[in-house]
Length: 375
Image (tube, rainbow, N blue to C red; front, side):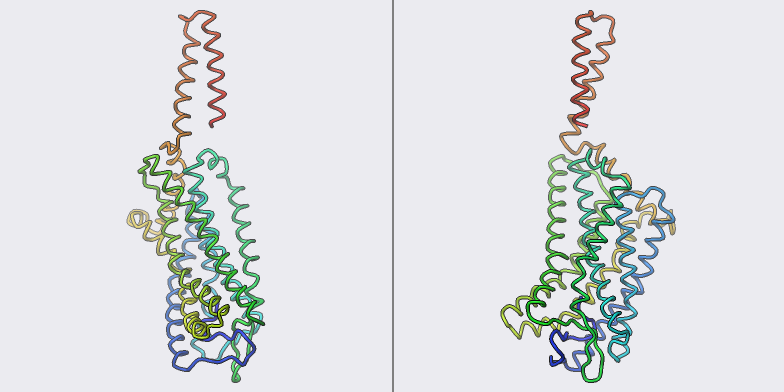
């Protein structure tokens, strides 16, 4: 993620140009406004979500656990807001040293990857619940979910490793700045292209594929039930796309400008980057607002526990999908169950002869084997 302080990041040795004072002032004003809003609403909101899940929710669904991790990541990254506010409002440049320069931006990048890959896991969970309900039941256990979430966090820390290597404290006109620093054009192209591919294009393609399959399956099965967990996840996906798409578009434009040596495009990207970065930063504060919106029906009767009621409501999503028979497998399972019970009753009937009883017993065994295989 680029610096919020200047409109022109210094990506080569310090002979690069610096923007005008007016542009810098405008960037400061926009950045300060966004950061103040993000921190005031986002940090307490995400802490409240974490508290609700840990202290109020009795039965934690898969969606609930993933939301917990998402809220914890957002709350953690919002702790970096005071550093950026000091940078923008103080007017003294970066005052926290090279280590904090690399660390703060690295953690912001980790948050981006954690958020998108947690959403991927949410989408995969929805897809399995609708298209592979029996497999989903077997996989929905604490051990599997905890391993999956651990893998996401480890993956995020690994994918964000380029950030500290391409971030450095530079001195210009007696002022210290924490800015992107690339030794050549290839490094710059690699960082921004890698960030966009692994932080948006690849995971978002996976998310769209999952939900396209889910929608097609639900339509073909004429499933009209209201699944609160799915609605909540869709809101989270749309919000992430809205706030992060401008940032990744700027990444793509910067790569194009570097490859084509288009200085006009590169200058435009440098002016826009701090603002779209601040806008992406705001995404960490929006999810609690979505939860309030989704749980508004619980607020009057549950008070501060409304968030717990919302997340406990997602606990039944999987069982609802299974009960409604959203696939052909469910329908066959029900038919085989009825047929097996009927055969068993006929076997027990005294009116049947011994030879017919044996035939019925054999048929019953075969049906039960088929039933077990389907299940």
